[in-house]
Every structure is written in structure tokens, then in C-alpha cells.
Image 1 (tube, rainbow, N blue to C red):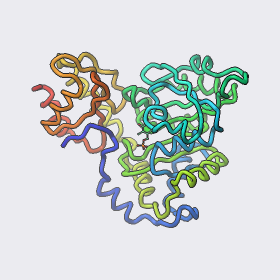
Image 2 (cartoon, rainbow, N blue to C red):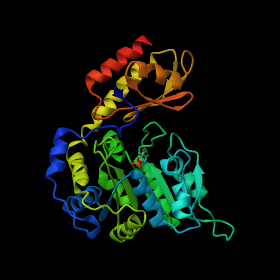
Image 3 (cartoon, rainbow, N blue to C red):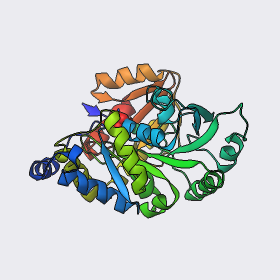
Length: 337
Ligand SMILES: *Cc1c(COP(=O)(O)O)cnc(C)c1O
């Protein structure tokens, strides 16, 4: 099977597995796992932030951030396609008791002007606007990246109105590699950042939440409450350390492959359009001979897996385990459809 369903499907490489096996481990609830401590410190330092918190999933790092930034009754401002709203099981309401103000953006991206207009006035009728959450790259937006100047403008609006600023950076390294940015830029403007190791970086499990030391201390308490206090999980953290050391630069290869796949798709008459490809996600609008679920089925018969995100939208995600041969094979198959 050639699996384009998500960049979460990667398997650890033999070198990653060997590194995991050699990792020193201990009880992390006691703060005694050297590999987890090293991963947390390494990730925080990479972004110029003070502290990190290793968690089993990006859902947990996002939800812990929201819980730590807010109190029940507050409001979170985010784009309507955001993972925190669409794909985290209603956690903003059930974990934090917060309401959400949804903004309609451009492929998942919002502007400083929209954020300013969404902040509630001081009025007993209104929930207190407490947190702005951005996503970069935007998953439902087809891997779209923010321009950093817009993020800076949003940060100014958030700060001057007393709101926190969180980044769902599940694929932040795809944006950083594509835009040739420095992770330190992000550490300067966000109050918290959630980073997935299990997406394009190729680790089997894990996300890290980074922020100021007092913020992470509070989040660590909530992680225990959420049931995310793991014990000898250092081998998993070691996979993350290995991924940060070896799998960052190569993300550009996934982006290049995504562009090649886009070119193959756009030639077909059942492909009406392909979203602009910036990173490792290709979303195509399907209409005519196939709809998206029918195209997924036709591809599956040829051992190629993709996802229908909507009746007319198909998504392909490039990652570490898609080789040049697999891509060539996929393009040959698409050519014949
Ligand atoms: C995958 C993803 C997450 C976290 O997902 P988990 O499966 O819980 O690790 C968060 N945000 C975005 C944008 C994602 O794509």
C-alpha cells in the first residue's frame, strides 16, 4: 500500500528504533526520565522558550494549553477549520468550559483585523475573550502557511487586549522549512506552542507543549489531571529527539513531492482545481467522472490510499515513508484513470 492518508502513518526508521532502544529512562511523573527531560529542554531551546512538556498527542498539548490559559466561561478565538475546534471532540467545552468565537479565514488563516473585531467588549453579557489560537500550517487549509508579519500583527492585538496567543504547531516545521524561518521567531510571539513529533517528523508518538516556565508548571499539573502523566516513556521521547536531529531538513523533500503530485492531478479532467501547494498536503477538488469517495475507492483498488475530506475534496499527504518510486507509481496510476 502507498499510504497518503496522513503524515501520521510513518513507521520509525531502523536508526530511530536503535536510538530509542539505547535511551536512558526513568519515572517521568517523578521528573526522573532523562530522555523526556532532554526532549522537553531541547524543544523549548529550539524555539527560545523556557520549558517543555511531553504528551502522548497533539490533542492533549492543545487542550492543556487551552485549559492553562483560560477559566470556565472564557472565550477562545480561532478559525472555523481549526483542529482544536473541528477534531478534538469538543474538548474546548468539555475540558475547559469555554465558548469559541469562530472566524472565517483564508484556508485556515485569520488576520489581525478579524481578531480585533472578535474581541468582546467589557460587558457582563459577554464571555471574556481570553485566548487566540492559530494553526500553522493549516491542516484543513491544505498545508497553508501564515506570513509571519500577520502573526506579529495578531500578537500585537492579542497582547494589547490582554489575550494569550497559542499556536497549534502540529506541522510548524513544515511552515518553517517552507518559509525559511527561524523557530526562535515563533518563541518570541507565542505564549504557548504545541508541536507534533508524530506527523512529518516521523516519530511514532508524541507532542511537546512549550512556553514560559510558570505556564508549563501549571500545564504539567493539568497533564496529570488529564491522565497524561506517563512513566518510563523515555524511549518515545528519544524518538522525538532523533526526529528533531535528523528529520527536519528533509521535510523539503515532501514539499517537492507534493508539487509533483499536484502537477499530475491537475492534468486530469475530473480534477477541477488543486489548492495552492505550499507544504506536504495536496487537496484537490474532484468533480465529473469521479467524486472524491469514488476516486479514493478507485485508487485503493490500485493500492493507493488517500482521504475524502468532503464529497468533492480528496487529500494526499506526503511524508517520510513515501519514496520516489511510490510517487512515480502513483503518478502512473493517476495518468491512467
Ligand atoms: C494532527 C493534528 C493535531 C494533533 O493530533 P493528535 O492526533 O492528537 O496528535 C493537532 N492539530 C493539527 C492541526 C493536527 O493536524
